[in-house]
Image (spheres, rainbow, N blue to C red):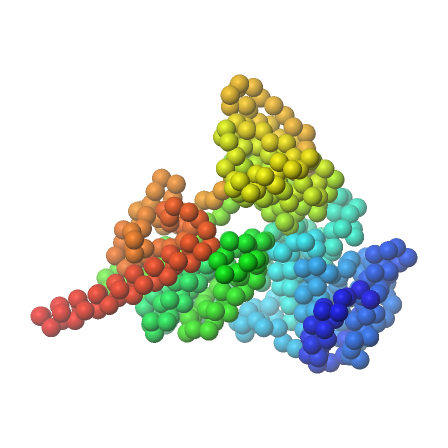
Length: 521
């Protein structure tokens, strides 16, 4: 059997949710991957009388499609969808059988209103925690709209295809044979890129919030929960609920939880927020904030304006770019930012990691188990990672560390073939031939959209006091977008709580002040 006892037990419970019969059409050869895939689909069929298996000729071998009886649904898995993609398979089975996806009605309407033919193909690795987000989103679209189809392609099973298309980052999605996107994309993001946007009129007539949180990461979720627990009208405006932790694989320093991962923690945050009366406006980006009379007004990218008596900025931070020639040109063609996602694509190859902090050294350690050789380039004279990580690095035979190295260019033709750096001590220029570059040089706050409205540091961090208050009365800030000394999940959550309590205190005092003014007048 392909599946162990625990997975079979869990799967058996999910298969009880199947509503109508489904047909798995299988295109298999005599290779080992085909044999394993055939074993998987046969095992699925043996576990439910509602699953039938048929032979078929599909575009790729090995692959299988998931269909309703008498109808091609448009969902195909090329390779074996195990690892992180096993959930994608289970959801596809359930949704194709007729169980409705857990998606807001306005999203369903946007999907159904798409006109034309859209054939998506997504290249994944089974160790990628971001890939299932894209796969599951496109599968949902295929279930809901007959003009949409989607194939998940496991890169390890189709290495020649991956090489021929110069795919060096996952997930990478093609639409009608043209590259569509690379990296994690939520369902709403995909729809927006296809030209389907949420109607700004849907925001008209919204009652003003007491507290509006801008940002949906750990700090934003914590702030919203603390505000909602005060019984006040609370909203979250975010372009990606979960924030930066969605790009984090293993989390081992979240106190009271020995180990978790970013997707699981983001799901827990979402579930916790949903337990309160918080209005979540996902996949919405703020472009302007200002105080007008008694309200804070937040303008959205779609032109809508939201009002609130107080606001909390928790927009987080993103990976910092090197800013050297070749970085943008070769992104997904050898330049990568997620070692957990993209390491399998560099198996047996030489790569570099830029950055000697915790993230850089963790990346080097992870990559060393997959690639041929890792070169760590650190700008300063010493590595800044924790000692436990440095000890682990010292024991790896295929890692070289170069300090005082200023990266000057990432070279390549159709994809990366090397990196240039300057020795900051000698001033000499050097070139290293390699196949990939992983950039791990810290964070930059997501605060450019604030303009001159709120006081910030030279590096763009929002300046806050001990209550999380900014330079504008009624506007608070928390998490990695602020000038806090350390950028950690647990610290972000604490600062989110602080900002919410500070905002609540502001509302109380402001309300009392207004009452006094009214009485006097």
